[in-house]
Each structure stands twice: as structure tokens, then as C-alpha cells.
Length: 275
Ligand code: UTP
Image 1 (cartoon, rainbow, N blue to C red):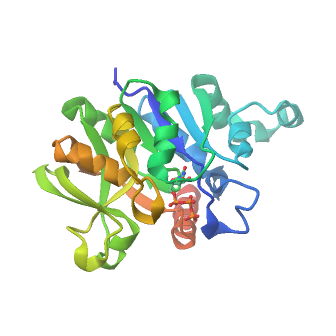
Image 2 (cartoon, helix red, strand yellow):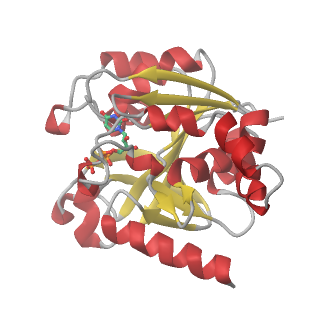
């Protein structure tokens, strides 16, 4: 059995790129056709053998909690109809997973959100999924690939992807030695560098496996770029000890934090479902 039992979902961000849709609704509830981003993320964690779902939420995010709960009125309304099957996957998740929530009161960055989530995790390695990075894979889910790698390397693992050189300023960018095909031992990482300062074009995307010493490091890391506590700065401390692997996953990622990526994801998924 895998050592990774819990997945943290930092979902406290404002999602300002999707205003006005996200004025009163979490970005993570935006649907890819009919299923919200957060449900895809939870299903990906389940496919990796994880059952403990831990959310770092914020104001205006209650719809997320309601989504992973029973709606008796709705259940009654569609009982005996064809539509019951539309809720079967959600019911399966609710019956097989546990859900816990904590709030990030001030949005002080992804690193801060993870630090806040520490009280839901405890002293064990854990996964992190950013639901707005929507990942599809043919066989093994992206997180499942990473959990298997963790069993071998027993250190923090970040999902990486080659991005166009002129987009490095949107990501944490890594530098490292390729130890095995697609597996990099990271020696350095830079948050959102300009193309000319980027050590490579390998970008960290929204899937992580983190060892629990990360909480102590987060606690001692000062705010970085934009005054936010960056997870990249914290991971750098682990990377300098040779304790971070970058993994070029098999599959495809859609940046659903941007309108273009979101529309692309819907078109891709709709075409798949229609076929
Ligand atoms: P983003 O950088 O995409 O920010 O955060 P955002 O606020 O969600 O979106 P925009 O830029 O305003 O449109 C990346 C991930 O980190 C979480 C977000 O919820 C998202 O999943 N996050 C970010 C937090 O949980 N807390 C923070 O303080 C910052």
C-alpha cells in the first residue's frame, strides 16, 4: 500500500481571471462540460489510492463543501429517473473518502496555503493538487504516476512540463540533472523568471508530493515574489539537499486558471466524450 494517504487542495485563491464568474463562486467549481474542476482533481487523487481529501478554503468557497455532501432534496427529486446516474460518481466519492477543511484567512500565497493546511495533514508525506491545472492521462493518472515514483525515491516530487521559452515568467522553473528518463534531480528553481534568466524551460505544474519537513521550512521561509510565501522558495531548501525530484509526467495538462486553457480543456473533453 502507498505511503500517501492524504491530498491537499489549496482552493483559497480569488480566481480573478474569471471574474465575474468567480465573484460568488469558487474557480474550482467551473465545469469541464458537466463536471467541476475540483471533482476531476479529487477523482485523480482517488485513482492514486488516496482517500483523505483536505481542503484549504477561503471566503465564498462553501459550494465546494456542499459539492462533496449529500443533497437530500436533489436525491429525492431525481430518484427513479435516468438522471440518478449523473450523480453516481459524486456519490461514490462521498462514500469512499473523508473530507476535511480549514480556512486561509489571508491570501498570502500558495506556500502559505500549504502551511495553513498542515494541521489537516500531520507528520506524513502528502500530495498536493491544484485543481485549476486539469490533467488527463491515458492509463495511470498523473498523481498515481507520482505516488509510484515516491515509493522509489522517498523525497519530494514535483510534476514538470516543458513550456515555450516566452512563458517561463508564469511558472516556477527548475534546473537539474536527468537521472532516468523524465526524472530530474533538481538543484535549483526560480519563481517566474524572465525568459533570459530561466535556467531551463521545465516548469513546475500543479501536482506535488511533499515530505512533512516542508512545514518547518515553510514556517522559516520569508515571503518572496509579490510578497507571497512561494512554495518554490521552500522547495529550493529541500532541493539544495538533493531531496526534490522533477517528474516529466505522461499525460496532458490544461491551464484552467486561464480562459484559453479552460476553453481548450472543455473542447478536448467534449470531443472525447462525444466519441
Ligand atoms: P493562482 O496563482 O492561480 O491564483 O493560484 P488565483 O487567485 O487562484 O487566480 P487568479 O490569478 O486571481 O485568477 C494557484 C493555486 O493556489 C491557490 C489557488 O486557489 C490556486 O489553486 N492559492 C493561491 C491559495 O489557495 N491561496 C493563496 O493565497 C494563493
